[in-house]
Amino acid sequence: MALNKISIIVVSGSRERLQMAAMMASVGAVSGNDVTVFLSMNALSYFLKDSSETAPAEGQVGVMIAEKNVPPFKQLFQQAVELGDAKIYPCSMAMDLLGAEADDLDPYLQEPWGLTKFLSHAADAQVWSF
Amino acid sequence: MAEKMLIDARGSFCPGPLMELIAKLKSGQVGDEFEVLSSDKGSAKDIPEWVEKAGHEMVESRQDKGVWHITVRKKR
Image 1 (cartoon, each protein chain N blue to C red):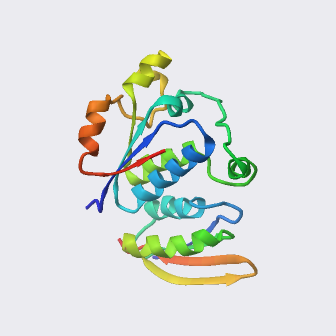
Image 2: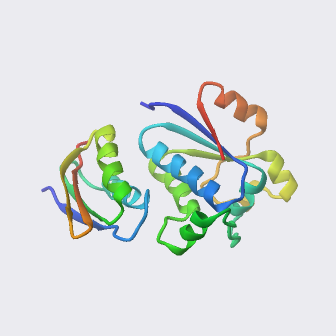
Image 3: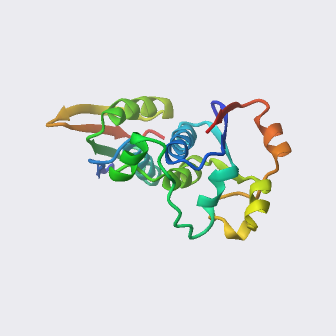
């Protein structure tokens, strides 16, 4: 009984944008919405298995996110999947550029999607971009 | 027998307390109560909003020395 279809496209690698996208995905998903996340461009490399890369802050709030007890964005994306049945798709183009295979990514991600698939899925959804 | 569980989310920022509550609610039984302790103002507003939307029951929400005590009963 999904309330709304929400499609979130994340292209930025900045901490604030990843954080906001993860908050929308997790809260959206646990509130009964059908949430799809599409990770592309600079957002994808954080989801490579064992990635220890830290997302750079754009400004003051991004710095504070790291200093205070704010749930990390990857934890929120994972909770979106585990608690709210969100689906997170890596972009196949970004995977090609990174030379990554599906097995190289965190296990809570789905199989890669191309842009055509994302566009079809997003056609009747709210679309949020970060 | 309904149980009451304490979720100490003090110090965590939005949406941490909400996500902790939901994780515990999922594994609980209908009728169980969950008391969330939160120092985050946003969560004090957000949790009751979510509870209503998700069809659970707000038992109590009170502030005591800068800490919100938000008690929720699992209804489904």
